[in-house]
Length: 93
Image (cartoon, rainbow, N blue to C red; front, side):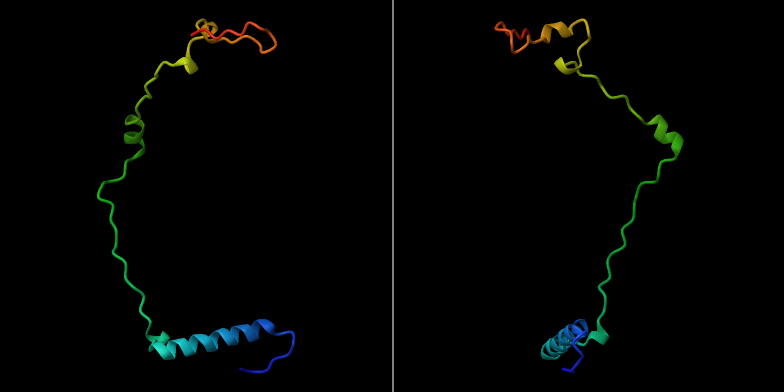
């Protein structure tokens, strides 16, 4: 390890890490110059892309399922609840 000035701690740490890496590589027989990147298989999309007109035609309407959350305004009084301050709290279904 080399001797550096006080203001160069990052370089000392980097050199220390490099020395450890070189010792590890030498002990395990790793040569970083011959390192080969693994090849990944090329993936292909088998369907063809939709253009704008096909995409616009293929849009389906969402089915509306009636529930108490989306009921009509005239029927909303069925699910009304009185105020908490009143003693006669009613929830009619």
